[in-house]
Image (tube, rainbow, N blue to C red; front, side, top):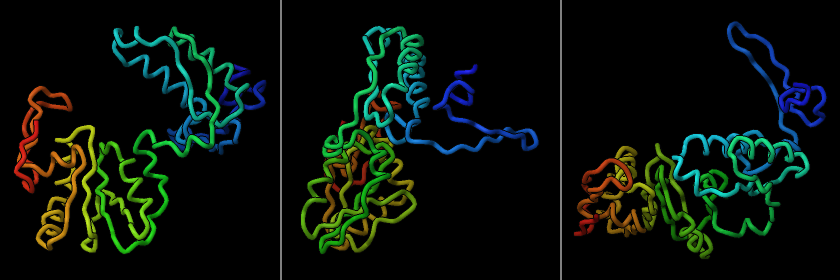
Length: 244
């Protein structure tokens, strides 16, 4: 255990965890240094390893058989410190770990990979034309908003659950979804269906992209359960469309 990444004495780059008992709970306080960080901003080195090994542990055997190697992308830490990590990943997954891919600053100009990027998005710029976008739990293709953000005098406001869609918006844009019926239910739970209806009564425009367009129809059907439980959901009824 001397080389343990947690607090091993022989690991000069270890986490140096200091813990104490608080009743029946063990409490540890720790602050990450730069050399601990790798992969995405949301993970430390141990998190990257656990993510890869954990994925192999839960996927079906047939899917595991299709994987020939693993990679770690967006790596910002010191590469040489990840050598033991590569060995651990390969040992637990039975496929080679080809190591980290260096983080390239210009890659930030590519579309974001997932909705976690919305947590770090810049505040909306002021503009005469306001586009309100409900942040659906399973939002997809949200980089479709980037051209709107680039337009002068256009302000794109992503609205979090728990907040109403602003009445001052000129356009409500319902984005795509990875699970349309589930996000349609979430939209109603947030009360945004009421906001959309009020927006339309005020003579303003509503736009749906992909799954968002389906939500604007009369019904959304998933008879084969591709995105979740099979069934049919009542849409917002804005369009005379029946989506399947």
